[in-house]
Amino acid sequence: MSARGITLTRHIMTKRETTLPQRDLALIMERIEFVAKRISRELTIASLGGETGFTGQTNVQGEQVKKLDEWGNDVFLEAFEHGHPVCSLISEEMDEPRHYPGSCKGESYCVLYDPIDGSSNTDVNGSLGTIFAVKKRNAGHGNGIHDLLTAGTEQAVAGYIAYGPATQIVYTAGSGVDIFSLDPSLGEFILWRENVKMPPHGSVYATNQGNIGKWHPNARAYIDRITSRKDKRTSYSLRYCGAFANDFHRFLLEGGVYVYPGEVVEGGKTKGKLRLMYETAPLAMVAEQAGGRASTGKGRILEVRPAAIHDRHPVYIGSADEVRLAEEMKVEG
Ligand code: AHM
Ligand code: MG
Image 1 (cartoon, helix red, strand yellow):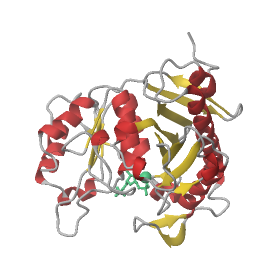
Image 2: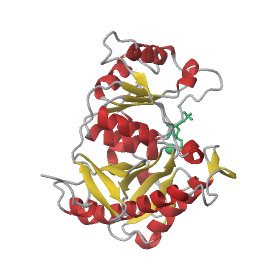
Image 3: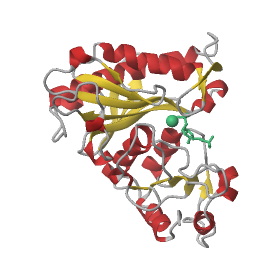
Protein backbone atom coordinates (compact mmCIF):
# COMPACT_ATOMS: atom_id res chain seq x y z
CA MET A 1 0.00 0.00 0.00
CA SER A 2 1.29 3.47 -0.83
CA ALA A 3 2.35 5.56 2.15
CA ARG A 4 1.47 8.79 0.32
CA GLY A 5 -0.73 10.98 2.43
CA ILE A 6 0.40 9.78 5.89
CA THR A 7 1.52 12.87 7.73
CA LEU A 8 3.99 12.82 10.61
CA THR A 9 1.30 13.65 13.16
CA ARG A 10 -1.02 10.91 11.90
CA HIS A 11 1.85 8.45 11.94
CA ILE A 12 2.68 9.31 15.56
CA MET A 13 -0.94 8.96 16.67
CA THR A 14 -1.10 5.43 15.23
CA LYS A 15 2.34 4.28 16.41
CA ARG A 16 2.69 0.89 18.05
CA GLU A 17 5.18 1.64 20.79
CA THR A 18 6.86 4.80 21.98
CA THR A 19 9.20 5.55 24.85
CA LEU A 20 6.97 8.40 25.99
CA PRO A 21 3.21 9.06 25.96
CA GLN A 22 1.89 9.54 22.41
CA ARG A 23 0.45 12.95 23.19
CA ASP A 24 3.80 14.21 24.50
CA LEU A 25 5.58 12.78 21.46
CA ALA A 26 3.11 14.50 19.12
CA LEU A 27 3.49 17.84 20.89
CA ILE A 28 7.30 17.66 20.81
CA MET A 29 7.51 16.51 17.20
CA GLU A 30 5.07 19.27 16.15
CA ARG A 31 7.65 21.77 17.41
CA ILE A 32 10.51 19.93 15.64
CA GLU A 33 8.47 19.99 12.42
CA PHE A 34 7.94 23.72 12.84
CA VAL A 35 11.67 24.27 13.33
CA ALA A 36 12.40 22.12 10.25
CA LYS A 37 10.00 24.14 8.08
CA ARG A 38 11.40 27.48 9.22
CA ILE A 39 15.05 26.48 8.75
CA SER A 40 14.33 24.78 5.44
CA ARG A 41 12.58 27.88 4.09
CA GLU A 42 15.31 30.20 5.32
CA LEU A 43 18.19 28.19 3.87
CA THR A 44 16.85 28.58 0.36
CA ILE A 45 17.17 32.38 0.51
CA ALA A 46 19.74 32.99 3.28
CA SER A 47 22.58 34.00 0.97
CA LEU A 48 20.36 36.54 -0.82
CA GLY A 49 19.54 38.20 2.49
CA GLY A 50 23.19 38.41 3.61
CA GLU A 51 22.62 35.81 6.35
CA THR A 52 25.67 33.68 5.56
CA GLY A 53 29.21 34.29 6.87
CA PHE A 54 30.48 34.74 10.42
CA THR A 55 29.05 36.75 13.32
CA GLY A 56 32.52 37.55 14.65
CA GLN A 57 31.74 35.67 17.91
CA THR A 58 33.36 32.48 19.23
CA ASN A 59 31.18 29.83 20.89
CA VAL A 60 31.82 27.74 24.02
CA GLN A 61 33.57 25.18 21.78
CA GLY A 62 36.12 27.82 20.72
CA GLU A 63 34.69 27.77 17.18
CA GLN A 64 33.77 30.79 15.07
CA VAL A 65 30.01 31.24 15.04
CA LYS A 66 28.26 31.49 11.68
CA LYS A 67 25.26 33.79 11.37
CA LEU A 68 23.07 30.80 10.50
CA ASP A 69 24.24 28.91 13.64
CA GLU A 70 23.00 31.77 15.78
CA TRP A 71 19.82 32.22 13.78
CA GLY A 72 19.07 28.47 13.86
CA ASN A 73 19.47 28.48 17.63
CA ASP A 74 17.01 31.37 17.90
CA VAL A 75 14.48 29.38 15.85
CA PHE A 76 14.61 26.64 18.52
CA LEU A 77 14.35 29.17 21.36
CA GLU A 78 11.27 30.76 19.80
CA ALA A 79 9.64 27.43 18.94
CA PHE A 80 9.99 26.07 22.47
CA GLU A 81 9.06 29.24 24.30
CA HIS A 82 5.53 27.86 23.92
CA GLY A 83 6.73 24.29 23.73
CA HIS A 84 5.05 22.48 26.66
CA PRO A 85 5.91 19.70 27.66
CA VAL A 86 9.51 20.72 26.83
CA CYS A 87 10.92 22.86 29.62
CA SER A 88 14.69 22.80 28.91
CA LEU A 89 16.93 23.15 25.89
CA ILE A 90 20.58 22.18 25.49
CA SER A 91 22.27 23.46 22.34
CA GLU A 92 25.66 23.34 20.66
CA GLU A 93 25.34 27.11 20.40
CA MET A 94 24.63 27.90 24.09
CA ASP A 95 27.16 27.67 26.93
CA GLU A 96 24.39 26.80 29.38
CA PRO A 97 20.94 25.19 29.11
CA ARG A 98 17.84 27.35 28.63
CA HIS A 99 14.90 26.69 30.95
CA TYR A 100 11.22 27.56 30.56
CA PRO A 101 9.91 27.15 34.13
CA GLY A 102 6.32 27.67 32.98
CA SER A 103 6.47 24.39 31.04
CA CYS A 104 7.86 22.34 33.93
CA LYS A 105 4.52 21.04 35.19
CA GLY A 106 3.82 17.30 35.18
CA GLU A 107 5.89 15.22 32.77
CA SER A 108 8.55 17.43 31.25
CA TYR A 109 11.38 16.99 28.77
CA CYS A 110 14.63 18.46 27.53
CA VAL A 111 15.40 18.84 23.83
CA LEU A 112 19.11 18.64 22.99
CA TYR A 113 20.14 19.89 19.55
CA ASP A 114 22.69 21.11 17.07
CA PRO A 115 20.65 23.65 15.09
CA ILE A 116 22.88 23.81 12.00
CA ASP A 117 25.14 20.80 11.63
CA GLY A 118 27.87 21.18 9.01
CA SER A 119 28.21 24.94 9.47
CA SER A 120 31.25 25.11 7.20
CA ASN A 121 28.81 24.41 4.34
CA THR A 122 26.54 27.40 4.95
CA ASP A 123 28.44 29.75 2.64
CA VAL A 124 28.81 27.34 -0.27
CA ASN A 125 25.24 26.03 -0.63
CA GLY A 126 26.41 22.67 0.74
CA SER A 127 24.56 19.98 2.71
CA LEU A 128 23.29 20.94 6.15
CA GLY A 129 21.41 19.21 8.93
CA THR A 130 19.83 19.66 12.34
CA ILE A 131 20.36 16.99 15.01
CA PHE A 132 18.05 16.51 17.99
CA ALA A 133 17.30 14.26 20.96
CA VAL A 134 14.70 14.29 23.72
CA LYS A 135 15.28 13.24 27.32
CA LYS A 136 12.68 13.00 30.05
CA ARG A 137 13.32 15.23 33.08
CA ASN A 138 13.09 13.98 36.65
CA ALA A 139 10.55 15.53 38.98
CA GLY A 140 11.96 18.41 41.04
CA HIS A 141 14.89 19.09 38.73
CA GLY A 142 14.67 22.90 38.98
CA ASN A 143 17.28 24.65 36.86
CA GLY A 144 19.89 21.97 37.51
CA ILE A 145 20.92 19.53 34.79
CA HIS A 146 22.16 16.62 36.86
CA ASP A 147 19.24 14.44 35.71
CA LEU A 148 20.28 15.05 32.08
CA LEU A 149 23.92 13.94 32.42
CA THR A 150 22.89 10.39 31.61
CA ALA A 151 23.90 7.91 28.94
CA GLY A 152 22.29 8.00 25.48
CA THR A 153 20.28 4.91 26.41
CA GLU A 154 18.06 7.36 28.33
CA GLN A 155 17.05 9.23 25.16
CA ALA A 156 13.32 8.95 24.51
CA VAL A 157 13.52 10.30 20.97
CA ALA A 158 16.40 10.98 18.61
CA GLY A 159 16.77 12.05 15.03
CA TYR A 160 17.86 14.63 12.52
CA ILE A 161 16.64 16.85 9.74
CA ALA A 162 18.51 16.68 6.43
CA TYR A 163 18.28 19.76 4.19
CA GLY A 164 19.03 18.69 0.64
CA PRO A 165 17.07 18.65 -2.57
CA ALA A 166 14.33 17.43 -0.22
CA THR A 167 14.00 18.30 3.47
CA GLN A 168 13.59 15.12 5.48
CA ILE A 169 12.96 14.34 9.13
CA VAL A 170 14.44 11.04 10.31
CA TYR A 171 13.56 9.98 13.82
CA THR A 172 13.04 7.16 16.27
CA ALA A 173 10.98 7.00 19.43
CA GLY A 174 12.28 3.55 20.30
CA SER A 175 10.32 1.47 17.81
CA GLY A 176 12.24 1.70 14.55
CA VAL A 177 13.33 4.55 12.33
CA ASP A 178 10.93 6.41 10.04
CA ILE A 179 11.65 9.06 7.41
CA PHE A 180 9.34 11.88 6.34
CA SER A 181 9.80 14.24 3.39
CA LEU A 182 8.54 17.80 3.34
CA ASP A 183 6.03 18.56 0.61
CA PRO A 184 6.50 22.35 0.50
CA SER A 185 3.28 22.90 -1.41
CA LEU A 186 1.29 21.23 1.38
CA GLY A 187 3.56 22.38 4.20
CA GLU A 188 3.43 18.80 5.53
CA PHE A 189 5.99 16.12 6.30
CA ILE A 190 4.77 12.97 4.55
CA LEU A 191 5.91 9.42 5.35
CA TRP A 192 8.60 8.29 2.89
CA ARG A 193 10.19 5.18 4.47
CA GLU A 194 9.02 3.24 7.50
CA ASN A 195 11.12 1.05 9.80
CA VAL A 196 14.30 1.64 7.80
CA LYS A 197 17.07 -0.95 8.15
CA MET A 198 20.71 -0.03 7.63
CA PRO A 199 22.58 -2.58 5.47
CA PRO A 200 25.25 -4.44 7.52
CA HIS A 201 27.96 -3.24 5.13
CA GLY A 202 28.20 -0.75 2.29
CA SER A 203 30.80 0.59 -0.11
CA VAL A 204 31.37 4.16 1.06
CA TYR A 205 33.09 5.70 4.10
CA ALA A 206 33.19 9.31 5.28
CA THR A 207 36.00 10.97 7.20
CA ASN A 208 38.27 14.00 7.12
CA GLN A 209 41.09 12.14 5.37
CA GLY A 210 43.33 15.22 5.75
CA ASN A 211 43.67 14.38 9.46
CA ILE A 212 44.82 10.78 8.95
CA GLY A 213 48.44 11.50 9.91
CA LYS A 214 47.24 12.55 13.38
CA TRP A 215 45.37 9.31 14.14
CA HIS A 216 46.38 6.19 16.04
CA PRO A 217 48.17 3.77 13.65
CA ASN A 218 45.31 1.27 14.13
CA ALA A 219 42.78 3.81 12.83
CA ARG A 220 44.97 4.36 9.78
CA ALA A 221 45.23 0.58 9.31
CA TYR A 222 41.42 0.36 9.52
CA ILE A 223 40.96 2.78 6.60
CA ASP A 224 43.61 0.89 4.71
CA ARG A 225 41.78 -2.39 5.36
CA ILE A 226 38.33 -1.24 4.22
CA THR A 227 39.69 0.48 1.09
CA SER A 228 41.92 -2.32 -0.14
CA ARG A 229 39.66 -5.36 -0.22
CA LYS A 230 40.15 -7.44 -3.34
CA ASP A 231 36.42 -7.68 -4.02
CA LYS A 232 35.41 -4.35 -5.60
CA ARG A 233 31.87 -4.65 -4.18
CA THR A 234 33.13 -4.65 -0.60
CA SER A 235 36.06 -2.25 -0.97
CA TYR A 236 35.22 1.26 0.17
CA SER A 237 35.23 4.63 -1.63
CA LEU A 238 35.41 7.99 0.13
CA ARG A 239 32.50 10.47 0.18
CA TYR A 240 32.65 13.30 2.74
CA CYS A 241 30.25 16.20 2.65
CA GLY A 242 31.31 17.95 5.90
CA ALA A 243 27.94 17.55 7.61
CA PHE A 244 27.69 14.60 10.00
CA ALA A 245 23.92 14.06 9.71
CA ASN A 246 24.02 14.17 5.91
CA ASP A 247 26.94 11.75 5.63
CA PHE A 248 25.15 9.48 8.09
CA HIS A 249 21.95 9.70 6.02
CA ARG A 250 23.68 8.02 3.06
CA PHE A 251 24.84 5.19 5.31
CA LEU A 252 21.43 4.74 6.91
CA LEU A 253 19.96 4.17 3.46
CA GLU A 254 22.78 2.41 1.62
CA GLY A 255 25.27 1.21 4.25
CA GLY A 256 28.74 2.54 5.04
CA VAL A 257 30.68 4.04 7.90
CA TYR A 258 31.44 7.55 9.24
CA VAL A 259 34.55 7.98 11.37
CA TYR A 260 35.95 10.95 13.29
CA PRO A 261 38.84 9.51 15.35
CA GLY A 262 40.73 11.04 18.25
CA GLU A 263 44.16 12.48 17.46
CA VAL A 264 47.33 11.13 19.04
CA VAL A 265 49.79 13.84 17.94
CA GLU A 266 50.99 16.45 20.42
CA GLY A 267 48.40 19.18 20.82
CA GLY A 268 45.88 17.14 18.77
CA LYS A 269 42.17 16.75 19.44
CA THR A 270 42.43 13.62 21.57
CA LYS A 271 38.64 13.27 21.69
CA GLY A 272 38.03 14.12 18.06
CA LYS A 273 35.49 16.83 17.26
CA LEU A 274 31.95 15.58 17.64
CA ARG A 275 29.90 16.13 20.75
CA LEU A 276 28.09 13.39 22.61
CA MET A 277 24.83 14.84 23.83
CA TYR A 278 23.49 16.54 20.70
CA GLU A 279 25.48 14.99 17.86
CA THR A 280 26.69 11.44 18.37
CA ALA A 281 24.24 10.02 20.94
CA PRO A 282 21.17 10.98 18.84
CA LEU A 283 22.62 9.44 15.68
CA ALA A 284 23.77 6.41 17.67
CA MET A 285 20.18 5.77 18.73
CA VAL A 286 19.01 6.08 15.11
CA ALA A 287 21.82 3.75 13.98
CA GLU A 288 21.00 1.06 16.56
CA GLN A 289 17.26 1.30 15.93
CA ALA A 290 18.01 0.67 12.25
CA GLY A 291 20.25 -2.33 13.02
CA GLY A 292 23.52 -0.41 12.72
CA ARG A 293 26.20 0.22 15.32
CA ALA A 294 27.81 3.26 16.94
CA SER A 295 31.10 3.16 18.83
CA THR A 296 33.77 5.36 20.36
CA GLY A 297 36.21 2.77 19.01
CA LYS A 298 36.31 1.27 22.50
CA GLY A 299 32.64 0.79 23.30
CA ARG A 300 29.02 1.60 22.64
CA ILE A 301 28.34 5.35 22.31
CA LEU A 302 24.92 4.97 23.89
CA GLU A 303 26.55 3.83 27.15
CA VAL A 304 28.84 6.85 27.51
CA ARG A 305 27.83 9.15 30.38
CA PRO A 306 28.76 12.78 29.84
CA ALA A 307 30.49 14.74 32.59
CA ALA A 308 29.47 18.03 30.95
CA ILE A 309 27.01 19.04 28.23
CA HIS A 310 29.60 19.80 25.54
CA ASP A 311 31.75 16.65 25.98
CA ARG A 312 33.34 15.14 22.85
CA HIS A 313 34.61 11.69 21.92
CA PRO A 314 35.88 9.72 18.88
CA VAL A 315 33.16 8.20 16.69
CA TYR A 316 32.74 5.21 14.39
CA ILE A 317 29.14 4.87 13.26
CA GLY A 318 27.20 3.11 10.53
CA SER A 319 26.92 -0.41 9.19
CA ALA A 320 27.25 -3.01 11.96
CA ASP A 321 29.95 -5.14 10.28
CA GLU A 322 32.26 -2.20 9.65
CA VAL A 323 31.88 -0.62 13.09
CA ARG A 324 32.49 -4.03 14.69
CA LEU A 325 35.68 -4.35 12.62
CA ALA A 326 36.85 -0.94 13.88
CA GLU A 327 36.43 -2.11 17.48
CA GLU A 328 38.21 -5.41 16.75
CA MET A 329 41.12 -3.51 15.20
CA LYS A 330 41.39 -1.35 18.37
CA VAL A 331 41.27 1.84 16.32
CA GLU A 332 41.64 4.06 19.39
CA GLY A 333 44.41 1.94 20.94
P1 AHM B 1 29.43 21.76 13.40
O1 AHM B 1 28.26 21.24 14.17
O2 AHM B 1 30.05 22.96 14.03
O3 AHM B 1 29.10 21.97 11.95
O4 AHM B 1 30.58 20.65 13.51
C1 AHM B 1 30.33 19.32 13.24
C2 AHM B 1 30.77 18.98 11.84
C3 AHM B 1 30.20 17.69 11.33
O5 AHM B 1 28.93 17.92 10.80
C4 AHM B 1 31.18 17.30 10.29
O6 AHM B 1 31.18 15.91 10.01
C5 AHM B 1 32.48 17.73 10.92
O7 AHM B 1 32.15 18.78 11.82
C6 AHM B 1 33.47 18.26 9.93
O8 AHM B 1 34.63 18.59 10.60
P2 AHM B 1 36.01 18.78 9.82
O9 AHM B 1 35.90 20.10 9.11
O10 AHM B 1 37.04 18.78 10.89
O11 AHM B 1 36.16 17.64 8.87
MG1 MG C 1 27.33 19.65 14.37
